[in-house]
Length: 311
Image (cartoon, rainbow, N blue to C red):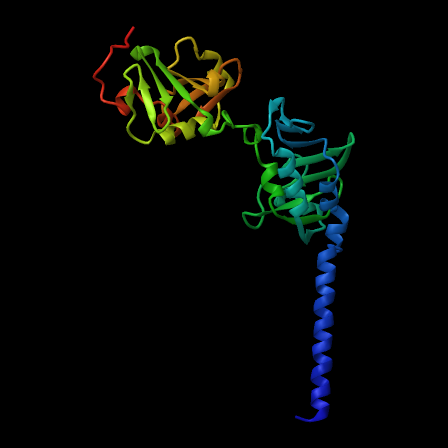
């Protein structure tokens, strides 16, 4: 190989390396026009007071603070972090259109899509119209109100704008350490059955029979300790439910009889259960599987030959 050819190869490699380094530098700074214009990562770094998502008559209002709320309900504890992370990881793609005639086709005309507004310090820091659909499952078209330009937005932010109120609400019913549960008291009013699971040193005992429970009691205990809803009862249903005589009642107690959770279950007409914590107005909806994991009868745990607990 001649010296001239070697020199040309070295120069070509140097140019390629410099070009690659420049691309990486620009990408790391996010200095493309869209990133500079929207500056989503900078919004994520400020303390977000609230976020409002509006679509037609539906309005989802997240409020920050020591405990996040959504439309006045308790929100999932990680709501603020989820929102900030989505803003930080969002990426603006290509410019799709500058023609206002395309807004309706792309789903970002006034009255279309989801209108997102982020507030910090009482001031609006970001306002976007986000389309219901994009080119693929993880993107959407976005436009700032008053602007003609429509951009492609990639990341989880678009999905968050499509969440309804229940999607942001806290669905954790019980959050306890399973090992701290020492007693589980069961009451089935319609079946006039009452019994208690008591943790012994090496096993669980079923009282008043005093017999060791068979089966996987640990799964039952874990389900109680981390019971989570799949949704909430609609207002019309919640108002009609009668909690004086539920399908079942379950009390979980810790060391020294400390109350961990007192739950009431009402079986749905179709499948699953409505669940309510004592002194809590929220009525949760849990799956049939979760409810059945907890609502064992004494006959599921021991052979029923012993004292009569009816009445």
